[in-house]
Length: 154
Image (tube, rainbow, N blue to C red; front, side):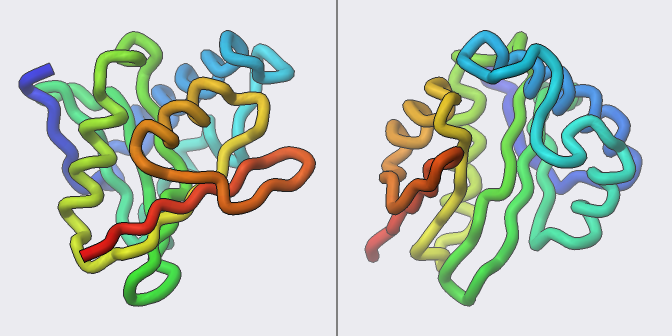
């Protein structure tokens, strides 16, 4: 994993990102997803990923050497608040520190962001523990989701 990097995604990457997203979200069945097939809106669609590429503040691909192994995208909510909308990693790279290193890259890339937010389904124990490990806490919840916040002080 010494060759791990994060770079801005391009339109040429959307097919590969959609393929990886599909595998990543289908693997959620192993950690409590109610169905073997399914994921968040557009998770398996190259058109959705192309739209997000245009609309998000940034869409990054996660690389192992030159191979795309995942991605994440963020939305700017204010000058100091960013939302991590989605992160997905190929299941063959789960539990190898890829998510941790990718999000630490993100926090360093945007030092002016003092508040990070995201949400995750309540059934997903894997992501809940992962976000807590990164310093996120549950700020609120509803019937289906936990809403996490991470505050970064000076």
